[in-house]
Length: 324
Image (cartoon, rainbow, N blue to C red; front, side, top):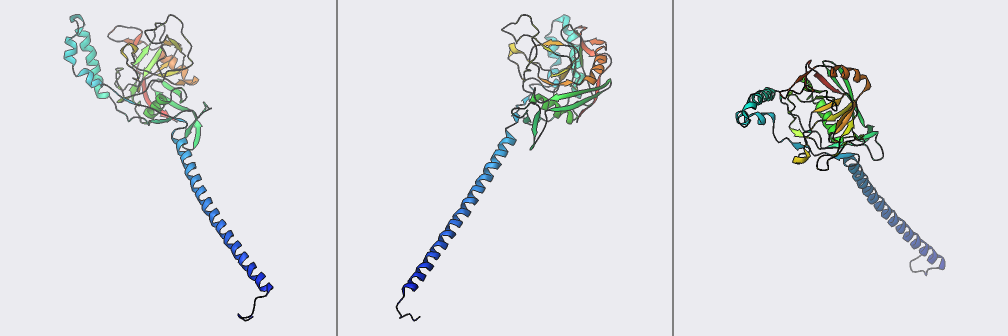
């Protein structure tokens, strides 16, 4: 058809149809581009949200932040003023003071430092006391650890649910070899306290790894009964046979707290103590016979003459602390 010829109605309908189809194609293309952009944005946002959630869960959910303190003084700091300390004692006690400080001085070369444990440690995932988070996995909240001693094996189950910071500290120290080749320096046999205390390389009871652990009061221990002094710590509770807890030098009257560290004690018969000692685990049943044999060891009293508390006459040496 010549361009000069008039358009028929059919030509007009075809032209209108082509314009409509072109407009519809353009609209579909626009919608497709919009949808693609929207999907891309949502995907990016979803990825960011998912990554954030995973990071938050990994960092905060199922973990607790532990604040490790700094030891105020070392064993070396304690004995450096030996002569001054002795002179400050009454004349009749200066001889014993000299012997005591000499014992402390003998432990100075044995002091060991250890790196601070990780600040962020696992706790049972919300709603569960059986599992803790490890990366993207959930593993048992209980960690087996065996003290291979000169008197036999003491298998222990560490429990992250009861005292997560202190349990993590013991596990870290064991893995780092801190306890290897150290003697358990204290055995008690009083009416209310029957424990074997270990974890001090110096053997003096004053050694520490260079840092202190936060207090984590035990829960669920039965009251030992008796009168309570509201000015002092809470009344005594019973630490059951087989309990493994962290030793400390806390003193409520002096405002001294958070003084735990590497030292721990194992209870060989129900004992009464204030609820100030973090429970990190329990001795497995197969280790009780070994502990009972150790408990029968004669005690060498200290300078205070206390026959119910002192070093075991036959040394109890931790050859290795093995965490499985």
